[in-house]
Length: 396
Image (cartoon, rainbow, N blue to C red; front, side):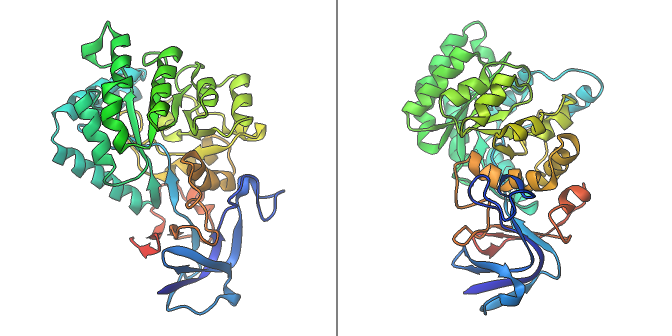
């Protein structure tokens, strides 16, 4: 059955290729949109887009009533398999206590004690929360178990809800390996990897002071790649460390955070296909300086936006909030921010079927209560999502 969505005030389609746009002078990073538009869905895919006045007939008609329609958001960085909560830690940060990577250990303790059913229920609740806010594709990391058994069950549970599963055994060194970080790296690269790789697509490492150094991170990534996983890196969040350079060297799909970059880091990202994934919700929740998105964009780097939904440093599942923060605090245009939250996220996951609404794309789309994409930043905090389709089926 075909579905025609018509009377769309603005249909954001996005250019599938970097830099391809309807008006390159005014539409950066592939952003493209059609005014007074319509879209046809057939068999879960986009079959046609164009002016509403030229729309073909279809079996079903949906009147958008002058609303805007965008590709479904693609969230390429989230930590959703966990137990417990860290609201008191957030309150302490707001009172002046600095954020440190070691806070992860409190979630590790709660996650190890949780049953599979409890972890699964929390994951599915958060996945539904994301979908209700327009996120139709999301990545999900392990990293709160840090034993072979707990990491393996984390990636297996994550694989029940998304194909974009990331093995993050190298999140922090757990308490039982205090004094023996090399022993833990050996475990992450050995038995733990063997147990997790069958359920994962990606391998990740937190390359940061207080977590893993360059040589340790390089060993983890090399082992994951040898096991058939693709790489991504938590890089340069707290310090201007080696994470970005390592991500580019190993051909990682993305370097995530990128809050503290040298000129060499920016140049390396601009000259490579590695995506700089920015997570403004983290800076909102930690009171750290925001990443310099303008610097990256002006250098020619590809930028994605993601929520980094996690119980410690950023407990939000709202991509509209991240878009608004990127526009207000990181000096991105509304077009750049929307592209980064859709096509940019797809690029960070090496996906060509989502993040855009070109003919043949998976029919993942979001309808918002506003006549243009700009309303996502123009009306921050307002529940604007009026409809969500995933693979052609209306789910919200």
